[in-house]
Structure formats: C-alpha cells, structure tokens
Image 1 (cartoon, rainbow, N blue to C red):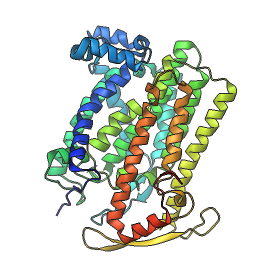
Image 2 (spheres, rainbow, N blue to C red):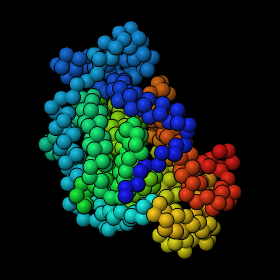
Image 3 (tube, rainbow, N blue to C red):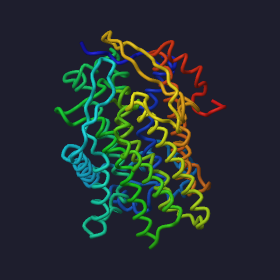
Image 4 (tube, rainbow, N blue to C red):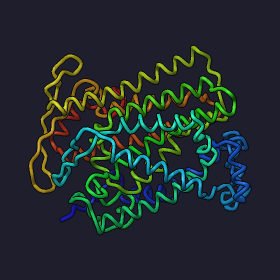
Length: 456
C-alpha cells in the first residue's frame, strides 16, 4: 500500500496552512516584481510591442521604493501593465534548454550511484553524470556565442517573458505531478494525505520518474534549476560586456563565485541525492516549482542587478571578496565531503586527522524493519548540527556584496536563503528527533548548537 505523506508539521497547523497558501499565491507575482526591478531597459521594447509597460531597473533604478510607489499609484492595473506575457520565443528558449538538459541527463554516461534507503525500504538508483552535463552545457552555450550562432543576450532581453512562461508552465507541471502521484506513482514512496493543498504543495511522490531511468527531481532540481543558475550567470556577464564593451570587476567576482559554487554542486551532486531535498521532501510545488522558477529568477538576482549597475571595486577589494567567497564555498564543500566520506566508509575514516566521534543510532522503517545509522559528532559536524549552512549563507553574501549597498534588492536572496536554511534546520531536527528518538537526544547533548557554534 502506498505510504501517505507525513502530515505532522513543524509549525502549528494554522501557521502551516497560512504559509503554504501565501507561498502558492505570492511567489509567482514576486518573481515578476523582482525581475521588473532588475532587468535591462531593452525589455521595454518587447513590452511595448506586446502592449505592456515593463517596469525595469533603468526605470526604477533598482529601487523597491520606486516600484512600491508605482504600484500604489496605479494599483492592480499598474501591476497588470508591467506583467510580461509569455511569448513564442520565451517558450522556445525554455523548451530547447529543457530538452537539451533532459537529453544530457539520459544519454551521457555516468557512474551508478545508490541513494539512501527510503522510509518504505526502497533504495533509488541514479546515474551520476551531472559534472559532464555541466561541462557540456557551459561549453556549448559559450561556443554558440563565440561562433555567433546564438547570442545569449537574447535570453536576457526576453527574461521577463521567460519568467512569466516558467511561472505558468511550472504550475501546470506541478498539476501533472499531482495527477501522476494519484494514478501512476513510480514507487511505494507515494500517497495522499487526504488534503489537496498539502498534496499539491508538498507533493505526492518521493521519487517520481518517467519510465525507469528519467528521475524528475534530478531534472527539476539539478539539471534545470541549478544548471540555469550557471547559464544565467554567464548570460549576465555577456550582456554587460555587450552593453559597456567590458565586464566590471564586480560582475567578474559575482560570476566567478556563482560558477565556483555551481561547479561544487555538480562535483558533489551524488551527495546532494542524500539531502532533504531529494531523500525526504516530495515532488510538489515547494520543491519543483521552486527549482524551476525561484532558482533561475531569485538565486541569480545579484548578477541581474549588476548588469545595469556595474561597480568598480578595485583590485584589492575584489580579491578580498573573491578569496573570502571561495573559502566559504570550500568549507561548505568540505562539510559535505566529511559527512559523505564518513557514511561511505561506515565511520572508518579520518576526520581532521583523527578517528571520528560518532553515535550508532537504530530506527524503524514504516515497514517495520530495523535499520542502523551512524551520526557524526566530530569535525565540522561537531561544531553544530547544521554548521554547513553558515559558509553557504556567507558565500551568498560574498557574491552579492560586489553590488555594494545602494539598494536592498540584490540582498533579497541572502535574506531568503538564511530564512530557508534556518527553517530547514528546524524541520530536519524535528524529523531526526522523530526518527531516532533517544539517540537524537544523545546527539543533541553532544552537539548542542543547531547552526552557529556558541550562539544558536
């Protein structure tokens, strides 16, 4: 029998429902408002052709206050006027990109990797070819520009239309996932909570697939969402170059750090398949719409802002920011590497030159089978239970700070990421407390801080 999604929530039921409904209704228009403050003036041309008024960064100077004043003055009609309509070229760009990434996911060779055992005892199998897909994608994209086959600035010039198409297309895709979860689930790790809102928001299936080999969450989270982050970072850089005849040092620092981070992600992609996003969160609006829309629109927003607002940092400051950002990304990677190596060797490895400190915890699956897990309590994981979130937030700050502090908008992603990761830490703690019981209490006694050592 299919397993129903967990209905126990981290927050109160009323707050949970309010949060879900708010995100379902407010995230789509926010993407457009964010883009309206950060896209190039050339988008106005396409908006005028479509009979729209596209409120751009040039028009509002990246100012949230100016956008607010405009909406306050013009009301709902003003918002309708600045909302870009999906166009044929936007759909074409999305389709070609999505089809290309899907083909790479299916066709490129890769090592066979097993995911963690699911609550119902299933173990998903993946093909680890993310780094190859990442390399092929960037080389292809840059080569198309270099040989003047396709100009990436076309993507930027139609960015509002692309986001609008993604918003609606991804909502339809989430409906597809909801229906598939009801009529054709891919495994026993699926089922309904009996509540449409919860099922649509959190998802019906843990590991939805099309056929045997095409994993939907790997596609939405990794190959579409994270890959688009790198593609758009390069796009912004090229657009600034074509506008100004050069790329500012602030844009170079931003783009370099983003690409280092995404490169780290694909290098470690097999480890990502053991995280909450893949192993615990089901495929619904929360994860899939977020990766298809929120990642390319919000995560890339500091670079989007810099296109029209180049900053001259100077060699010394640029190098300081770059080194600090790379260091944070490395620490974030090393945290994940430590835990992955610890799990791979079943605790028989060295952590910071010593045998790791650990707790052996037993738990029972939903099928009644008893399993054992090892909880790492040394190295980075001895500092705090979710210490790896600290360098991740700091890395985001360092690839945003080249924009300096004239406007808040570029820093929205840093604020959002902080809230997201603190909430994720709470959800993970609650899940582990429920799963491991007394062993988790012992673990918390040994590693008392949740995220920030000595503080929280």
